[in-house]
Length: 85
Image (cartoon, rainbow, N blue to C red; front, side, top):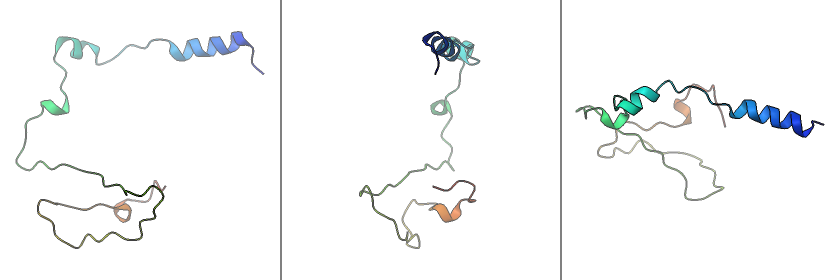
């Protein structure tokens, strides 16, 4: 079991300040944010659709129906499988 001094020492190491590499750009107003980029004609947006039911199991997703403005539907079958839930 760790003593209070050991715990405080570990917390002090965790909380020590580190230099921010983006600080100068942010303070001078030179930092670029995603909102600063110009709108492009080919720009698309992504959205996540979650189930309205907290413990529901999604059995299938019918992405065959064409909807106006929808460029692509991505589900877990499109992922490479390196990260599974």
